Length: 159
Picture 1 (tube, rainbow, N blue to C red):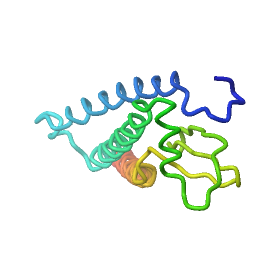
Picture 2 (cartoon, helix red, strand yellow; picture 1 turned 180 degrees about the vertical axis):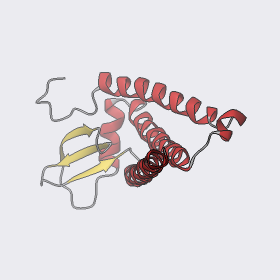
Picture 3 (cartoon, helix red, strand yellow; picture 1 turned 135 degrees about the vertical axis):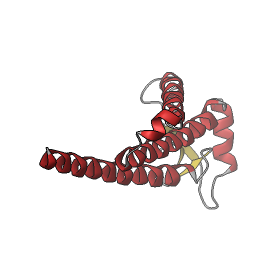
């Protein structure tokens, strides 16, 4: 496919790379988070570490959901994607003139001749849930940083 092709979906090489690195990252996060449940790690647990781990757990959940959305795209060939665009074409939309795949937000967009477009294949809950989880992760990370900073300044004043 050439870059000017209006009927291109997601780039397979990029999609496969995202799935491979994302799965590896998710596995690494899962192993790390599971290691935090050991008795030795539990004894050294501090409030900032707990918030950090909650932040990492929400990032892992967002990544898992993103990979789930990518799998929806991976297993549909171009013809099946085109059929899905036709099948879900809203009332009043004349004919389709193109299709494009976006990675952020994750979606497959069907473009109509009247300028309207609509998303298919990727479940509607994926992108809003990912955004919510990432905002929660950011909030937890900020709390962790603030608690760590407070602990360090308190320790330095005592020392």
